[in-house]
Image (cartoon, rainbow, N blue to C red; front, side, top):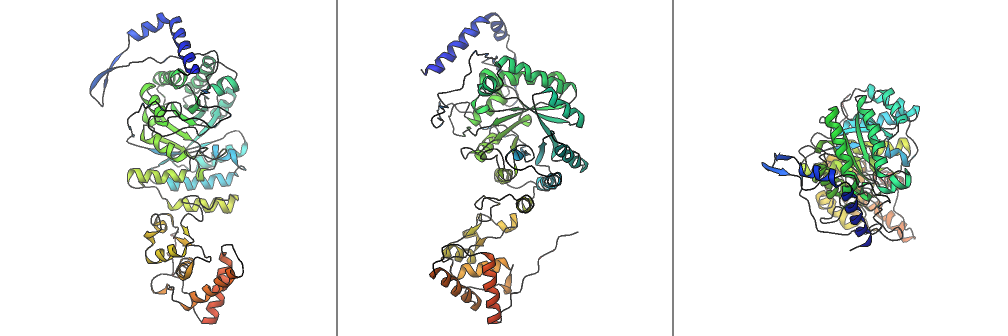
Length: 498
């Protein structure tokens, strides 16, 4: 047996023996309840009490700091448990702002409008969280509240501090997130507390929140390095007791702060996403609709982990627009819009064309440079450079386009012009750029296309190695139109209603 694990088990046995009288009484009086899904009586096999260790358990066997983190397996699996209703929440103005220059008040309000439109009539972008620390942030909250939108609901985020809580009360928020770091890395090393001290501290702030009638959302920071059954589940059981006492919803957000979560069947906790969600729902009793996942992309698993959280019992996944966030970023909100449609069969009222508008706005108004190969929003996501691919797109876009990107995202498939583009690629570029439709479209046999192709070939024969720019192509096309007496008739586009 691994020495660290053996010591942990021995320590738990000793502590259990020390409190044997209390434990035996609790264990022998376990309630028998009816499982409404299985229609069978059930009794809980295990009791989960706080394991108030004297030294931090940092799972060094899984997280050796001088090596790559390990992914061990025990082949224990849990069943799918997809909630009837799933949705997305947004952290663009909170986690998303921690990694970039702050948005202005006006920019926050505009982006909030976009989120409202993207979420659609059913409000599938359910909530958005805000900082409250600066006047600019508070002004943005007030202006967004003035919009009167039901969704996204405006919520806040604070540390587990009574000073921070004063800000929530002053603004009159209905819900606030509270940072309740749950791994021993944070409890022992950052907060300099024991598990019992941390739990008591967190619960005191949460109670004060409940006393004011405000719904707390508990952010279990660093859950993928936490002792799930020795701390997290016992803490969440206390939260559920408070919810029953105060009759106010308490949300639980499982935060994969460092991106250590994995979705592999049979992986051990605390790395198993489905294992964490199962523990929170089944053993801590957190209802689906109050359970949320917040992931990071340090190991390229942000999106798949969020989807896994949905599939195993969390109703909400927390995201930021374009994945902008700490270090490698958060789960991209636009990605989960498409995951939702893939799982449920349609967008259920969400408007994906707004995603393109958001990406364009962030680039033009905030200076954010979207990596060109970013799915759904990067300028190259539906662009091809190979001439043979361009020829296929000319014949039928479905051959090389992942779906009708023009219909769904208002982004027609594009080709980049280089030495491999060929006549078909040039013709497609002209038709797409000038929005030529029907009889107005030009073919690869056009004199204008041949003229541009001759210029392109000369450029690369002269030693060029870079892709041609739009401005260069437009200049050559204009020259060709003049010399060949060709007029490109731009197809009229429908104008948006006022």
